[in-house]
Length: 261
Image 1 (tube, rainbow, N blue to C red):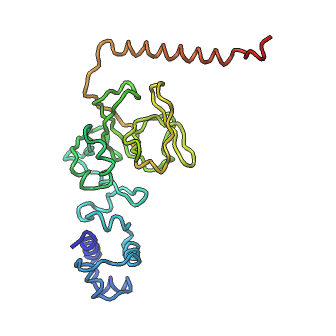
Image 2: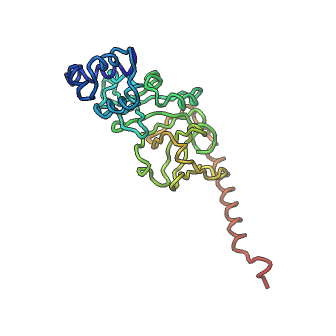
Image 3: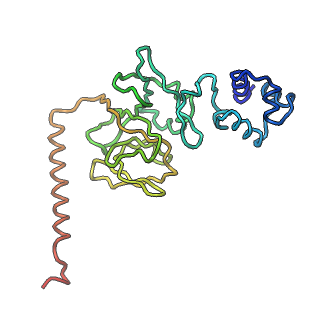
């Protein structure tokens, strides 16, 4: 037996069709169809495409996801035939938010499209986050102050690139750079430009082919308290950056030696 055979049997039964009726619709014999349903044979690609169009379900779902466990009507439609686990709620009706663990964050790049991997993650519920699909991602490094290592950024799934808002922050899931938390600037035909709130870091261009998922900032969860003088140090740093920028601006306004008289 295979996921495909289980799925087509389930879909046929849900529509209350006989094997003969479905075989006729696919222009094959009932005996041939029965072999696909009992898993003794696999359909060729041209027939798999026909089955996909008949049930209006992507091939990716048919061959990789047990759709008996994940109701189709509750699945989010994603590009390139991927799926996100259906929005699950607790007994109070609050969304269950999967938590991507700090130490295993790179594993998300391999498991983000695997329903069983996502289903195995721990979850939390936040009653003020209701509409949409949310996940919590670990923040690391010093590129986005004041978020420290151990902070979790809860993001709302973004379905379309056109929904991105300038100067809003997002979690970008990328093939080469992993999980990035940055501020969106603009997008071109082949890439998007993002930047860090820490000005010591240069803006970054991410090829669109490298982007796997985008999650809009919804809230943050800090697991460490701030020191009493932590923000005073940040103010000194900000003053230094402002002074550095002022000096740079002054240099650009000064006449060059060739034009000075």
